[in-house]
Structure formats: C-alpha cells, structure tokens
Length: 281
Image (tube, rainbow, N blue to C red):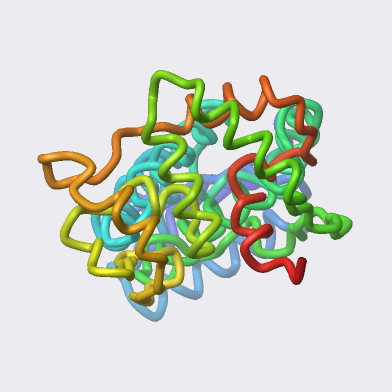
C-alpha cells in the first residue's frame, strides 16, 4: 500500500484486503490529505468488506434541467419560456457537470452578461437555476446547491410611470391609424380593467360578459371579474368568430407607441397601461 508524490499531487494506491481484494486509488493535493484518505478507506473496508467509495455524480447541467422539467417544471404556468431560458443558460455555461459548477464560475458568467441584459433579467436567471438545483437536492439527485450563497443584484426602485390624459388620447390616435385594430381594443381593455397585456390579449369571447370581463389563469393564479362600461363591451364583444377575442397585437402597440413619441422608462412599455389604471389621476 503506497503513497507517493507525482506531478498532480499525492497518489494513493492501496489493497486493504490484500491482492485478492479490491484496489483503491486516488490523487490528492497534499500528503496529509492522502494519509487521511488512506486511513479512512481502510476503516470503511474493515467495517464492510463490500464497501465502495461514493461515485462522482457525472450528471450534466442539461440532464438536471430535464429531470427538473419532467418532475416539476412542466407544471408551471411559464414552463415553456422557463425551459427555454434554462437551456440558454446551460449552453452559455458550456453544459458543465452540475455538481462541479462553482459560485465563481457562475458569477463570472453573470458579470459577462451585465452589459447585455438588465439586472432584473440576471436575477430571474439566477432564481430559475437555483430552483433547478434546489429541486434535485430535494429529490436526492444532487448533494448540494452550489449557487445557494450567490445573492441577487440589488436594484434601485424606479418611480412607476403612468400616462396623462393627453398622452392617452395621443396613443389612441396612433392606435386608430394601425391596420391591426385589436391593439386599440386591447389597450382600452387594459386601461379600463388594469389587466396585464398578456391577460387582455389572450382573453376569449366566453370571458367577455355583459358589462364585465373575467380573467382566468392570471400570473397570481387568481380569477377575477372586472366591470366594464356598456360602450367598451359593445366594442369588444364578439370581435371575432373564433374562441380568442383578439389576435396578437404587441408589435402593433409598440409601433403606435413609438410613433406617438411618448417616452417611457425601460421595461414599462405595455405595463404603463396597468400603472395608469391604478394611478389616482
């Protein structure tokens, strides 16, 4: 049973049960570590001749994301977009062995992206990847979450912006000039009910009732019914013969907003409609 110095460190090569038994080999950084590992292996084999040292977990990050998605992620409302984001992160990290990803590697990756995306996006990415590790630790698939001590980036709170009456009139004027007329109706619905753009855009004809709309499958998970005026109801009711009341109209809204010259803080494009609904003016 030998311990010898090699270029990479200290090499241990032992046969605790003799040449007829199992052989154990490992390279460690220091001689002290090598001596302790040798003693530990001999103790384990003495207690249990069939003992095997724990094998390294060789699952790649992509494997862990697949396991997470099959067992948990697919049931989330944003499952498809979440999976797309996680796969992108995984590819950009080089699909490392999940257990070998270090906090330093991830923070370097995050720093490299700081000029490409917002701090809010970086915080979401960290939360999504942490969730994958946490879930696999719970399942016993991984021993630890290497990202657990990485903190979110602190973001200064920005004052919420809302549209003035003149800006609303200006925006509606430009929306009326668009070929896509649904953008105008969705905007009116958001202003009247405080709905998120996606909630209003995806609404079905069945959710539009006499003088109210019912939002289901919302971000908060709660269904809510909001009253609307008779005039707005007459505009949006049975707007289309198919199930959905509107077609996708985000690009049309964006074009009208740009043409109007209204300047908004980053990240408040359609959300300004929700802020305007909640504003006291």
